[in-house]
Image (cartoon, rainbow, N blue to C red; front, side, top):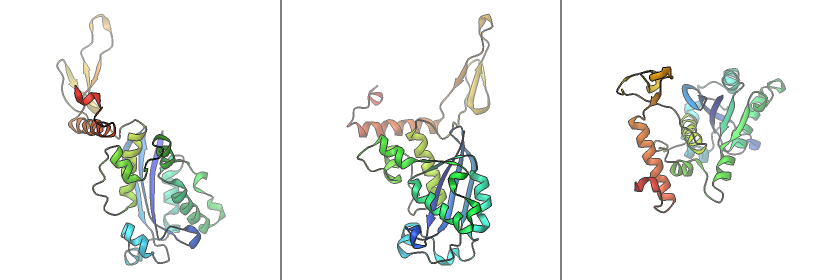
Length: 238
């Protein structure tokens, strides 16, 4: 299962007012694990960035002047997302802007959903947490995802943060970074320990040990549950 977590920054909020995409950030996951592959481009929008938008993302007109236009990066973007499931927070916003960029290139380019499927994490969050704030910052706090570097919005950083939030919200992990040795076994790739073959020829038992970083994530998750439940997290009382 290949998933691409995507975010954009734009010159303003309304595509109907002629606003354009100025940054695209994507991170790749295979089988719910981050692969380390990403797609990140700044784009010359051929128009001015609104003051209000600049205050959100800090990307200036001067910075964008020597960047490529969307036409120059479109094929590379399509190749990166083709056949994947796009994971986007408030997908109508980003998809609407990307569809507009493709339309400006010509009808033959089609729309985003001609190349991949789209999952909106805002819809998922509202279903799981009705009546609560479900913007990215609120979800980071709810799921104990570190967003301390997010002083300004940035497409690649927000895509990386959303990947963590999505995996926490849907019950998974970003990656396993395991190591260690166990009595009677030797460390294998991925931190798996293969024990000696058992009597009677039964298959070896695989033991997977949690790394210190994972234990800390687990502790933070329990702390978040404890705070949300008013101190009723039983796992912290053991």
